[in-house]
Structures are given as C-alpha cells and as structure tokens.
Length: 444
Image (cartoon, rainbow, N blue to C red; front, side, top):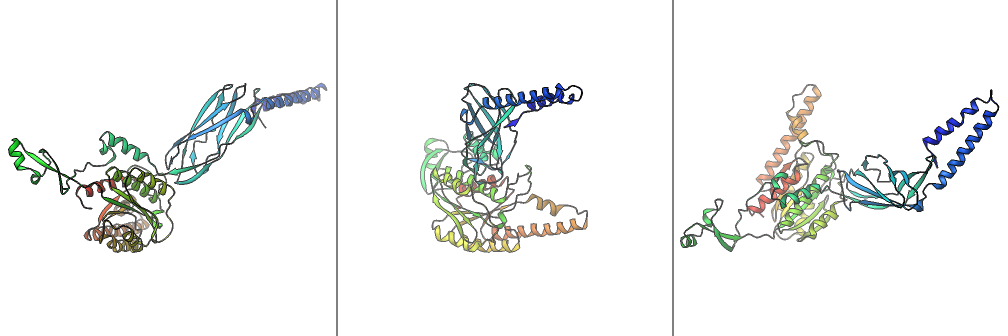
C-alpha cells in the first residue's frame, strides 16, 4: 500500500488541531480522532481497491521486434470489478531497451477494457524477455494505491531492421525501386535457348534482329532468348573483430549505435530476398577461422526465413579472421559455380593483404564479390586542413589508410574480383545493385 497525495494532505490538515493543544486541550484529542478516522478510511479504500484477481492484462507485441527502431507495444487491461479502475501502468520490458518510460495513467470502466500503447527501441539483435506488468491501482476514495503485479512474462526476439525490406517490397510492387537507390538494370545477357519473336525495341541489339521474320512482316522483329534464372549466390559474413565496431555517421545522419555486423546482416537479408525473387539459389555462411554457421544454397520462399532465423542473434567476436581457411571451407562445400559475396572490412594492412591473397581461393571456382564499408569519417579526416599538430598526425594516418584501401581495391579488381564499397546505410542498396548488374550481364 502507498498513500496518495490526497491522503498526505488530509493527514497534514488533521494535524493542525494538535498545534493548538497548548491553548486548547481538546486539540490533541481532535487531531488524534481525525488521524484515526483517516487511517480507517484508508483501510477501507485499500479493501475496495481492485485486487489481482479483478484485473487482467495482455501484452501484444510484434513477433519480430526490429533493432534500432521504435516498436509499438500494446497493453490491454480488462477490469473485472464493478468499480472503475484508475491506475498507473509500468511494463517490465528488457532493461536494455530504450523507451519513453512515461508510466501512463489509465482509467478502465467497470467490466470494461482499455489499451495502453508505448514504444521500445532495442539496441541490438538477439534473445530477450519481458517480465510482468505492474499497476499502481488507486482506491475509489483516492487515499491509497495498491501495487498489483500481473503475470505477463514472455520471451521475445529482436531481428535485423526489416523496415527497409518492407519498403523495398512496397516499392517493387509499385515499380518504384529507384526510390530506394536501386537502379533498373537491363537484362542484356543472352541465353542459349530461343524463346519467342517480338517487335523490335530501341534497346535491342542488332544481332538479335531476325531478318527473315522482319522481311515477312514488313517491320523489325527481334529474337528473344530464354535467360537462365536459376543461378547460385553464397553470402559470407565476416564474424571477426572488424565487424564489432560501430559504423560512422553517414550522409543520412547517425547510425543509432549500429555495428558493422548489423549493417552486414541487413545487406545479406536484402540480397537473399532479391535473389530469391529472381529465382536464384541462395546460401549463407558466417566465418571467423572457418565456417561457424552454414546454410547450403536453397531456392524457394523458405530461404529468407532461414536467413532471418540464423542471423537474428549472430554477433561479431573479438577474434582474428582466417580468410584463407574460411574460403577453403566454402570451396569444399560449394561445387557449383556461384557468386560468392564476402561482407567484410579489413581493419589494417595485414588484414587487407590476407583478404586480397585468400580471395584467389574463391576465384578458381567461383565469382567473388567483396563488399567493404566506406568510412566517411576517414575520408573527411584525410581531406581536412589540420589546425593543430595532433590534427596533422591524424590526417597522415587517415591518408595512409585511404591509400591502403585504394591499393587493396585495385589489387583485387586486377585479379578479377568484383568490389563494392558503401556507407553502412547505403550498403544494402549498393550490394543489390551490383548483384543485379552481374546477373544481367551473366557474370556468374
């Protein structure tokens, strides 16, 4: 039981007669009588206040909470008593989650129901748990609060932020993928199997014109070839120390505590979704000193679900990465020629050299695509005008790192490795663009 401000005020007023006791002997008795009366009323108020058996609660929350975004949580309160329920509500959500923490006040009519909504922002992916719901219910006289603890404990999972994927789905249905930074790529690849004839279009190649059909119909006619759709994509995520760091602020603003692994997971899911929509088989691996997790390439609607369930709790570890051993594992497991997408970020010259050397293991049997993070803060430091001696030192280090990244990119591209560099917030769109380009030009 907790007293309300009303009871505290009344008790203060009841004590006033005791102050007059030296001049009026009856003051002490009157004050004591008033205090006893208020205590009795408080006891009655407590007895009339709703108990745990008279209140029910149901928490409604998304089955998949998204990391780094505000997720709505609804608490449905049902009052089983014949008196109104006035209370403040506090949900025992995971302590890591950011919330408004407003502890809203709610009033539920007799035998009625009310809904309370608040929002939670999880800072990372993984498994978490909600606790019970706590109410501070006010008695009908407004003198005391009764603490109620309503059972509502339940586990919950935080998944990668799928809002971008939902926007892509909506945009693709409306043929507006350019809004997301995805460029329309013409499928210029030629299959070997003839499919049909159709009227010539301005973008058609001259070699596709069927001159005999053109002569018969009196207008230009093109041959259409069936392009192979069922290709194979293998996505590899670096689970080592370089992926632990938070991403820098990009042109879209702060990344809200997003790590490189979070950005890589989002990009992997977007690629899996798009590749699946294009009929490709998609596989997944998470590597450090070898493959730690592995999903063989599959095709169908269940691929994206498998990706999501595998990646929702994946975290990077402070361990050195063995690119060569990891890529050997992939070559042993994947026999069919595939586009192998490596999401990584070598943090120093040694790691960059190891990556450039090891990617040749993939190049012998597959088409490698290395995806690295573009650090806008690093470029800004390299181009800045130093104002103090320590700024000049930072600029020199930044310039050396930028030069090393450029040398790495040139070395891999000379070796036939495709490369994508993008900020964390643009990574998914740039990766999908590159995939569509390689698929359209039949590079794998």
